[in-house]
Length: 462
Image 1 (spheres, rainbow, N blue to C red):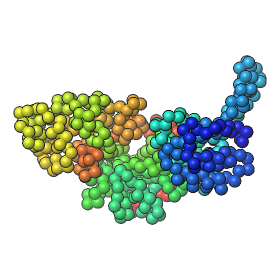
Image 2: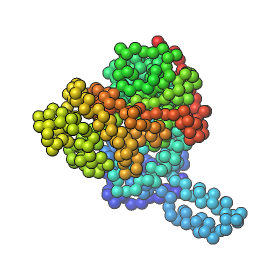
Image 3: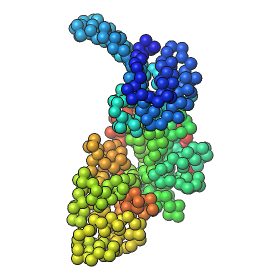
Image 4: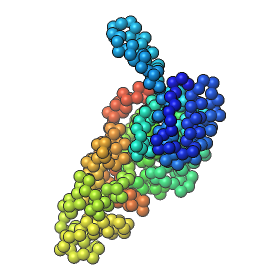
């Protein structure tokens, strides 16, 4: 592919001193007979020292300099333009055109993936690219598209396998899950052990080239009915049910450990695989739902509205007071020392109340806040959209994008009254419901769904 790599001058913004060296190693890697492992290690070592600006410079240089020269494409393109599609020569010319327009970056990235640690490097490379691309003045789409094309080929049947994490799994596996659970963090390995057993399950999706680090994992509680409070799931003092009593599977923690795979639908596929497996193992389980946090509800949504600093949401500051009764308004105003017959300053009073965690311990305030907060949270989940017209809340976007449904009765008040839960979402959690018909849709989405290998199903303890 060396003859298809086009070299240009330096980037207009002037890349840092490290970037030309990394770019040269990429060029060398594109040549026949390149010492792939050695060149990859040079790239990896240098790349890990780059700051974000230098990474953007590198991405820009790769887009501009590792590309097909125009003069390689024009001759075959001219022939295609004057050839009739019914001409036998058309198919040959079209094949030749495809060969000549094949991105040289694809061959380079394939060589990177073959080196020890290469696939993990590409995952981290795309993770960084995703975070930098929206703010770059250069269109980095060509580079991003090449990586996505390869990932879509590599992360499917034959490369992936599902493994259940059990009490018999390796200490390293259990430890990694424990360290990687950012939804409900654990303080000890023993706590992770308490989340494994007959009615507490954990499934992880692995790639064969990265067998030591799951791509994504999900923690599941088998329960009687839909659970609406996180402590009913993770509190070891709660009475656990027998396997035969369970009729519901609750997905309470889903963690993507490889942000470089964002947008490829592997979370959707993992949920589908777990639903399929649990249904086959436990025929009495018919309900599948999540118990999900609502990150961003307070800091990014309701607090700015109460502070009257953001008018971009559907819910306006002036709308908030209309969700409360006169009696509720009066009690909330009095709780911060404002006369109950005055409605001015209500948003400020509510902001003051919710900024402290003390309200969750006050029975009267809890009653006054429950219905309005549930209504506001439901609007946040279902009505508020980002610029791409997707749910503003990322967790809602993930599950509803997967096909899950939600109603106002699935919005649970004070379902997580921990300090983190109150600061993140005023303690609110959500049940997103996955219906039985959803699984058949997943099967159609992933043609290799039923071929995925499931391994590591051992004893589950008591």
